Image (tube, rainbow, N blue to C red; front, side):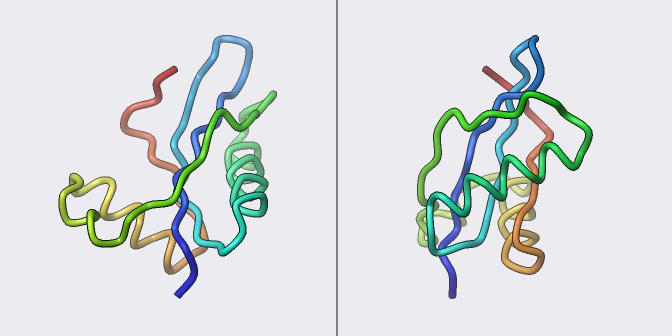
Length: 87
């Protein structure tokens, strides 16, 4: 099973930030995938802020939206978490 990453990216000049969960073994590929996913959703000036591994054994502690996004990322390769864009 490939690694799950959470990648926070910013978009547009007003500083919108999104969390993207990506399934890949390589951090740099996961970050590029997250940038591409947010860009393909219509956002511009997309930049990676930070990224980190998701601990599989801690997923059960997360809320349903996060768990659903993790499941979608496993199936589809990535998923954007839209419920709380922050900066």
